[in-house]
Image (cartoon, rainbow, N blue to C red; front, side, top):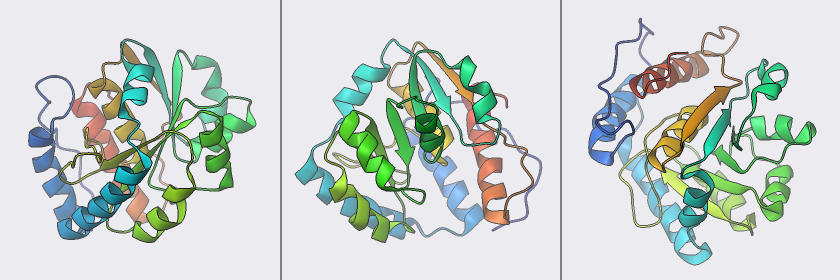
Length: 225
């Protein structure tokens, strides 16, 4: 991973959200920054495509949840609990933020996850009506095999590489900024963000790099955090 430098502005997507054509150059830059292997991401996407073909693609349900609605995307920073009163509309959670919400009596409408924080509670929430938006990348193939077949409710599938028939790409890199990008692409009336701390220095280098990229991506679609 390269040394972190002051964020350089990314080009703003023409429609306010990313198409694959616009996202691909950002993705190539991310791969170079972290040393990711694109072919591994593509392999993971193909594996998830095979699962999605059998289990069904819940994109239409996610679109119904988002289109024309106010959406609050919740990150998992320590400030999340104190910011819960700011929630409006339908709630999307970035991975483990879902467990904080659930502990406070809030069932997220959707959870965006690459499964690195998945627990049996994710299965329970999915059974209760939470849409699981499962992301494939080169480092989580074993997690895909372990968790995806256990989600009996509605699921949507995403990749950071080229989209496939049932595996989508609306832009975004971390679970949080990917949720914001998806909400905008699916027609949200307004997207609110809580529980994000992109200045957190009490994290390991890889996480710091991801926060750097989350800031750049969010800024490119109009969110200066």
